[in-house]
Image 1 (tube, rainbow, N blue to C red):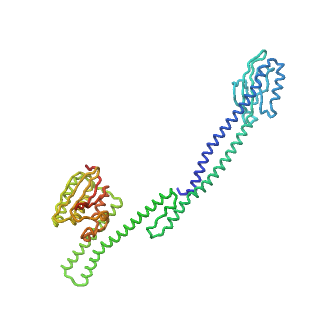
Image 2: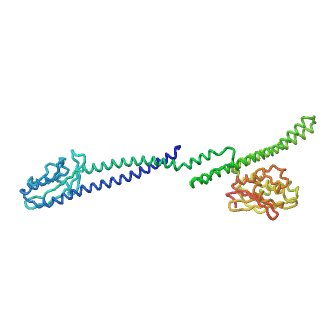
Image 3: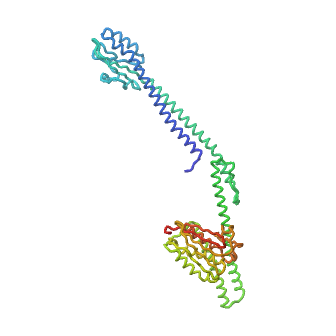
Length: 457
């Protein structure tokens, strides 16, 4: 959902205040309403406390003439308060007919309300029974109080609450929007700083010192992304340069040989030799292209799919047997130690192990022994190949699995190969959820990789 953060924050502030104000106003109104009801009841109780003893005291009709006058005097002109004495004997009754036309003599003692046709608000009644005395029978004394003035006070208070609440919500929304705009000022400055980074300069970074602590983490993450982008760009540039370098030599050879062949007349045998030489160069180029496509698939997250349960010792033996001609040239022996069964891609395992053994054979001391170790570490199978040879500096060990990397100072004759063998080993390990490792000590150089398998044991 698109929109301004400032407007969203202002709206959220307004909604929060609206909710809090609504709850507070409801509680205040309920409190005032209860207080007004208590006032009405207290006034009725007070009038009863004054008049009940008087009504109970007079027991003859002669005295009730003066009592009626007294009740007339206590009744206001607007009849906000009214009195009724309900009794079967007319000599003791007072108040006349009920204003709603109903019979109130059956009402229970206590408080009650009655809706009157000429009033917008109900009348609150307090009914009490006064016991018979002498010739006076039992009577019901009712005091009625009009609730209209009290309810008008409640209505005015409610209107004022609504007005104040509405003004408060609007004010908070405006202040919230302004506060959010002011608070988001560093974000806008950070955005302008990011937009002002010059194109083409991959070393530029955001200045995190002047930012608030909440934005420093974001800026550091952004700088980290820039650093990763710079590293990827450098790697891409290096990759392009290496590919161009690797393909330039066979292309140059092909062009030169073809130009020479076309410049002079050649017999069939010479042309066959030329085509054979060109084919070798083309095959080398094809190998580089295929290896690069394989590495691109592995780096894009491709996983090994053709899995099968195999014995690593048996598969390693097959790889060694396949490489026997390479080993025979330098009179090298291969010793395989360990075994386990794993669920892996057999073809990829052969490819990576063959690259490690060929790499070891290329730089091993003649007539020495190459050791292949197969070890289990939990759910991972670890494969390592060790050979006796010149020590490798730790600076180079960290980069030997990179594409086209050549440590000329540490590895002689590295220019005879296109430098993707160890990168393929790392790709195979990644496709099996593993990793690669290398170390050089005590005259032994060891390269290896690990494979994750649910069937490893």
